[in-house]
Length: 128
Image (cartoon, rainbow, N blue to C red):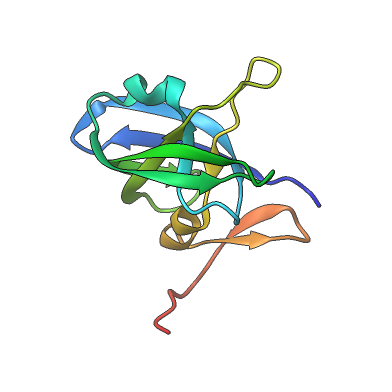
């Protein structure tokens, strides 16, 4: 299976001077925008909404801290206001791998083209 990586800009919705831009792996098995805990201070003072337990792809259970509100914009798609989950990550080859989960994809109207290994615009939102 191929990997889809997209450029994302994340801003503190209350303080737009606090932001970050990164490449993130599209992961339809994840729900939130998932960022490394090491980046939390880069977005300034975000409200902690809740702490959650998350299951990784290797079935390991880890704790995440859900914070917000943030403005998330996947390159080429409309910006949305949402929350992010911060988790402890170990960088691979000196790089963290943030994740774009399905909630962010749906709200951004971004669909996954598995054959083309890319994100495509969704014309209509679901009402069902």
